[in-house]
Image (tube, rainbow, N blue to C red; front, top):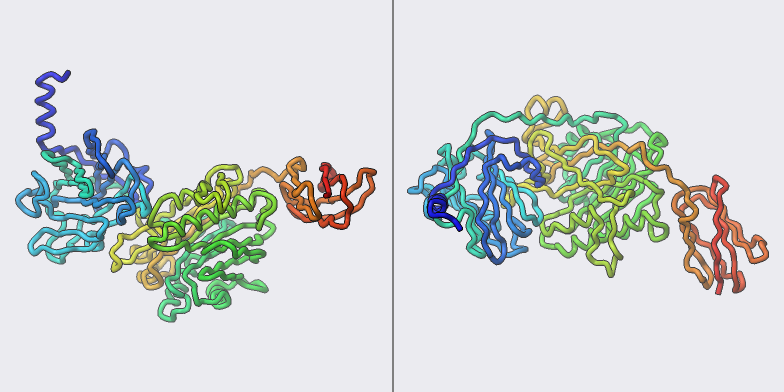
Length: 575
């Protein structure tokens, strides 16, 4: 039982403002939250039973440029949509004066009331106005459903062109969900924060040149509605692509742009001095460009274009690259279906038969404008292989060669502590991460990655890389996303394990398929019960078909021998 003094102390705490010691901190808005720790100013809600989204925790910090706020709830939801019913609103008393602004709750005079789902804010100054997120320099992550979000608001904004946003060193913050009337803090309490202007370590810009010339540089770039055919933008693309100098490029929104036209641009911008020059292949609005030959392609996936790239002998392997542009906006079901398709494709590639069979430990990567603005499980499927439509695509399983998850590369802006890849200030939404690079980290190591936004680069860095400050904004509403990969050297050598070979169907009415663990030179023979060789076939592959329709019904022996002279036998029944 609580004693009277303890009850009194608790009551006084509830009725009074909570102000904690501030701490300026280096925060990266990337949706990962690993830079938020318990030492930062934190407000934790009291235990309560509530239906819907329960507001659990607020954390606040700042640097010289931004106020940072992290919110935590009990369930996942979409910050700027209503996939899960919500009316989340963030109120800030920016002058710490309860007699100005809007009296949203006892102890608050809110100058700013942000309504995330409706993409605007009330600016309760004189004169009153509605303002957009660009006026607040608002940044938020992630763009998919989550139970945590981190938000940045510019400290030096003048949202209406008249009244500065923050006019006091101390502010008050209130979070409300009007869908169920939850509040943080609750009635009778306030949450104050005082800016800490202690300098933080400046962000070190990323050198956009390759660190190792043997690395494979991948570029993922949405060209915004056939941008490479637009005479008003193609010069900007030229500056950007020449400065990036990719080895492989996955280009999207190339609807009416031809692969031959893109090849000619790359040949002119980045001449290879080889007989063929650049290689380019197209599927729908996707164009994949490679400095090395594209030896095979698959056209069966929706809005996803896998190709096999024949790397030079110095790499000792081929490379599977998939260029993707998943459905946009509210098409969550279609995006999940597309993610399921890719997971099933990779699982097929790792096993004999089907539409694709890769040599064991072939590196693979996946990139593009994935439009992940809804349920988070689409991204989960792409990384973990957790297929949702198992009736259509089969059971899911881990996608990497070592039966672990794939890795999502956290590509940060080259000159900002931000990870957004799309920005269009006149569309209402805050800048967000829509473009991704996902890869097999069993076979590949990401040596360097970045997002290029020329508008935030210094004049010195622009000159260093022969760029103009308006290049990326003029070219597209998406920014180029880049990762340099090395191929891991200490991979398990394909072991040509014949005991893993399979023959199906067995029994058979005629044709059979022989599936093998890895590529090798194999001799396959069909023997009768007397040991006579009836059929001989030599292959250099992981699978093959044999037509045995001419053989009479009975028992046969299939003998498979590899290049090392090892062999295995299988019994076969011919109906």
